[in-house]
Length: 104
Image 1 (cartoon, rainbow, N blue to C red):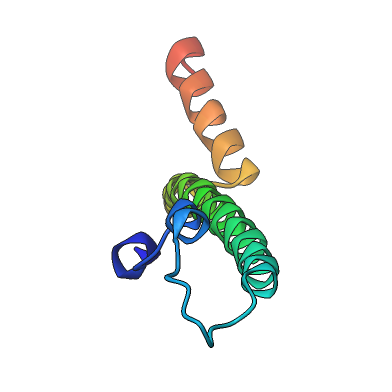
Image 2 (tube, rainbow, N blue to C red):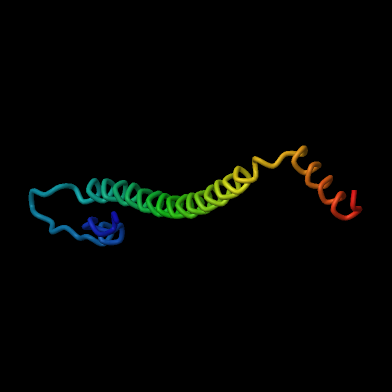
């Protein structure tokens, strides 16, 4: 994702050599500044990798929760289809069965 758009790596920044001109910048200041850039760059790469891993983990968790949600909805639909059966209905059925079995 981000790696495709990135031009430099921390190592490339670290290993970059500048040509020294007679009126150029002070090499020590350039080195100090580049050291700060490298430190920031490494920290950014690290946090970027952590975020990518966290996104993957959350996507997996999300898909598991979606599957669980589908299962629960299916269970509710099954329970809803049996909603018309009450205790009174069951007692009436038992009574009818007793009449058939015992011949009353």
